[in-house]
Length: 165
Image 1 (cartoon, rainbow, N blue to C red):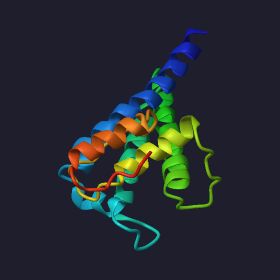
Image 2 (cartoon, rainbow, N blue to C red):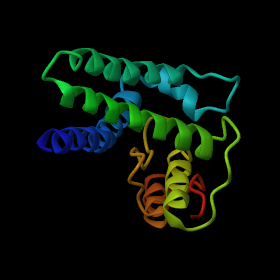
Image 3 (spheres, one colour):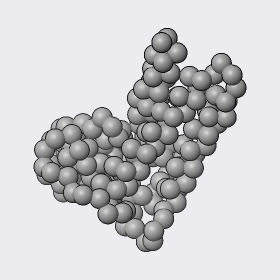
């Protein structure tokens, strides 16, 4: 039974830790030195794919490396961590690319509730088309849309970039 708890903890820990990794990567790398790739995600779509999609390859390679390392006997928890990273990637693809950006058919979310907050927080992030001034860099833990909109308005005085929540 302890192995089951260890493996479940590794899976859930990696899944939850990916929110921190995604937040930090989005804030300091994508809106930093690799803005040249991420900029495509803040611009109107010009095709099916964006340069920003290359970040999915980075995160997938992280999961693949963990699966590879965890393949050795006695490292099952590492494989379960890789499964947690992969699960985060699947959630991201479904919710971010499907529900938020409508890159494929997905049902619309009803007003109110967790998914609505998540969609609104991400839309407020996209209210800014430059690498500076954006709010809401996370994904699974969305901030309150009213607070994010107020913070966005405070960062862009005189502009009407921030839609009402």
